[in-house]
Image (cartoon, rainbow, N blue to C red; front, side, top):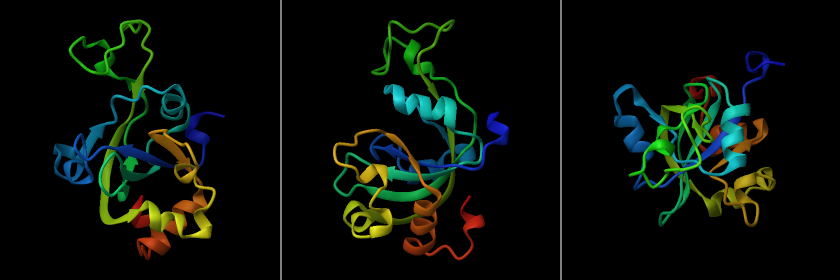
Length: 168
């Protein structure tokens, strides 16, 4: 089955707001940002093999005083090589990666909506979300899949979307 035949998927993507926040995304020209710097093979594989244009994204602020879902975005491109892996001045430089054989990819993410912050304590307080990967003990992945029921609960119940189609 090709990506074109896959049903829409949902993802949680973590960003440190000091690097790129939901407000930064909203203010960027075209309201898109390349999701660069992912250096975990499983997260890379999610972008490379699982994501398709139009997939929903929970934009999650991490590494800050109040981590949590800060907005909604969507996948705006298919995966392509992350240029930071080739730049010796970048903290994401990978000397084993070459333009002919890149190790790391990223996708572009597009702004949909800034929301109220839905923090970890609130996410943990709902039994409907008990199996959500971001809440699993020891989870440190910057990108995790979100089940459709989890997406509907967060976007519909916690964030109050009356028409989930408007949030894609």
